Image 1: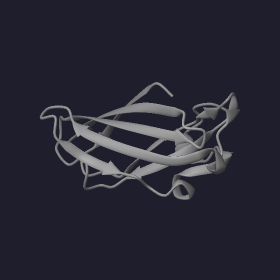
Image 2: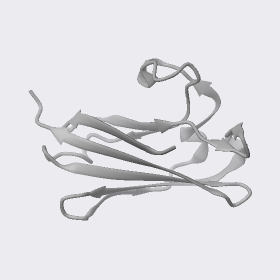
Image 3: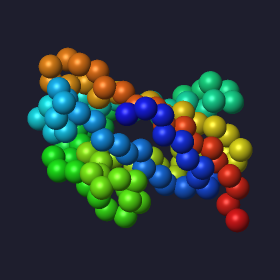
Image 4: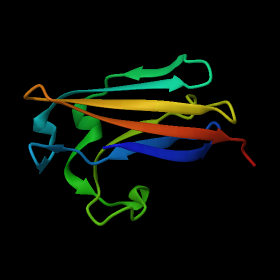
Length: 121
């Protein structure tokens, strides 16, 4: 999935989303045993998030191309985790989130997301 970067307003809800494959095919809920998401404040190294959400809540069996995807490409995404507005609250801070998907066959898929917060207007 690579590294995805974004700038967000402090105290904003935002989504970590992407597309992953298992053995060359778009991943499905049945292909995933667990998903772990961690987040770190890069200025202090402190943890801001550590969750293991229910697979069915964040992995989709069909690719999604809704407005959240923003036309990034025509294919869409098959996982999305909404980060609460209480996580990235300080302006000017870089946060790094890591998503680790463990497939049913034990393979690990991972993606990194970096967001920088800016003051609300």
